[in-house]
Length: 86
Image 1 (cartoon, rainbow, N blue to C red):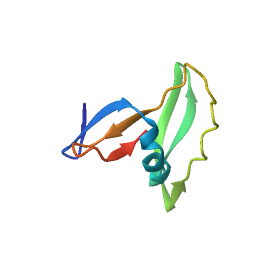
Image 2: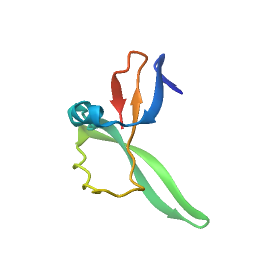
Image 3: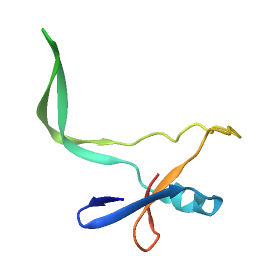
């Protein structure tokens, strides 16, 4: 179980009845901070950089895996069973 902002989320394997709710989830996000990567002598460093206007990222739909026996989708849901992510 994971808790975010006082909401407890549980995880389970998706079932066919979840398909419509998964399709309805909005996986985009908006941020006003990005990370600049710089090379250092012993590896790399990340530095936060503010951006204006904020950036919005929208992820493309995943490619269909077909009937891959090793392919599973897991969903996160709240106490009422409402899906919050996959």
